Image (cartoon, rainbow, N blue to C red):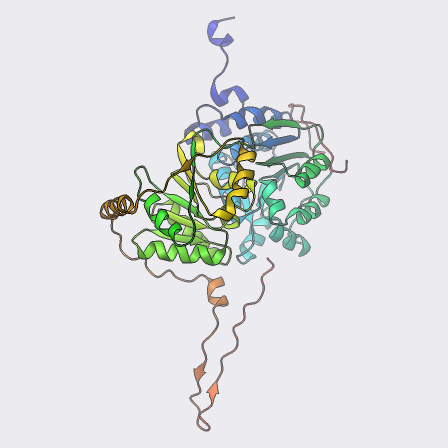
Length: 456
């Protein structure tokens, strides 16, 4: 055997993926598979159920998208054939984007299903029988109950960020969806943490799974952690200093309450930062504008709540700042996973009041390391750094007033207008304008793919 044929294949070529998938991988610039990809792709190709325990930012989306595309291309059949469930709209859209990237040179079609927008376009897309559905459980159930979704051909089920689905109460909906799927299918479950409820779901769902566990309870080594003991109004002063330090590119600032996220973003904007809030009370159009602005650099500070920020996939985040201490150790892991992605350096700072130190101890037990305590710099040092950063920050024109999407127009109450008719000086009232509630055995391909049953 010649040296060239005996040499082991490098990179993604080792997986022997479909040429159209490999071409997309090459064009996307992927060279060597990340650990979660190397651990999961062969198992998915073999038809095994998979339990992937890995943080966000580790490349786990490609770990299931690439082999799913290979399987679908290897034996073309009518869709939908793969269902990917996501806890948030932002994550669903990001997964869909990754599917489109890797399916670029194929005819595989994907569509997204999530709430917060009108369902008409989603129903139309489903009529086209896409190969892959990326969905949030709530809206998917709504469309199933209306008879718009046919899941009888689903061969592969993916539960992504299963722990967060539990956190926001989606597990009952997930179980209802699973009952409607064919029992003969492949199941893939990915989670950053494994609370008892997710462990129970995995035991019921997965049959002799291949387990890929990549230090799921520990943050990435590229993240620098630090704690500042501070409380009250002084937090905001310290935040300004942190955002002015050398090496700052962009940050996500986490708050535990929606109103605080909005108020803090407004305050940072008044001080000259390009800040925007992302919280649960925003319409989908507002959320999209905030996220698109953060991705393209229009905003360099995103002030967010935990639920709103899940699924954010932005490469240039240099800082994650816990303005409020996370309510659980798992939330800390999820928050700081926004920085230090793809083996880049990142900083995770936490502002801790006196009442928060017990929560901090639990976080340190979870990540199995003691977080460095740092002294708060003197006021004159902070003021000098802030002034220098303010002078260097590029000035931008005021953000133009965005056009309201249909959902926002429907949700805005109509104004009361004076009656133009005579008599009595009474007021004529417009209709309330109250928004209506929108409903939120294939042939073998030769890979020996086994089928697992959900009714175990």
